[in-house]
Image (cartoon, rainbow, N blue to C red; front, top):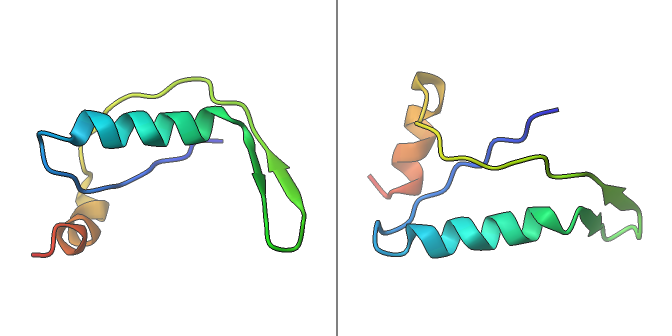
Length: 64
């Protein structure tokens, strides 16, 4: 399964935001409000370009 995370950040702080997302995903665990625990394994992380399908959402994230 592939998880794609779309976020907006100032270019000067993009690396900080990306590091925080990677750290959160690398824990491999999330306990929901119903106490159910979901687990996963992070195989890798990389930067990608916004796709045509994501363009409208990306614009909303940037406040355009």
